[in-house]
Length: 114
Image (cartoon, rainbow, N blue to C red; front, side):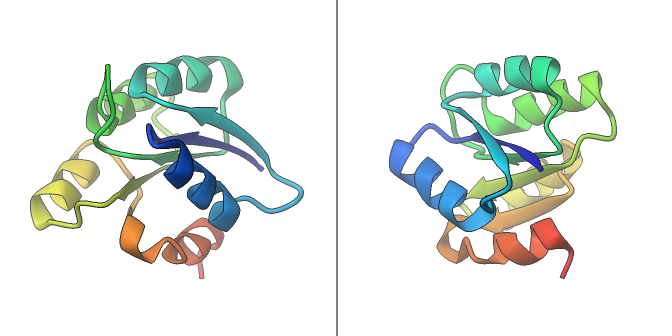
């Protein structure tokens, strides 16, 4: 599986990668929303794991831009802010799931549909 991780914090990006990516997966790492949209357009990953609060283009706007490129894109928002407004904004932007950074191991079930 080709996975795109968009997260501005390098340590958190590595933690997401450690939980989400298996040995057979290929991972593209981005540090902001603009990079995520660019890489999505050229690489067409199977899955996007997107932070909400990022520089240049936040995850909500990046998700909308990615879905404009491919309405079938699978985007999972991964955020430390687990409030209802952030969840609603994520789903309104087209995310297929939301995972709190406090529970990264939830990514396993979201990714593999368990």
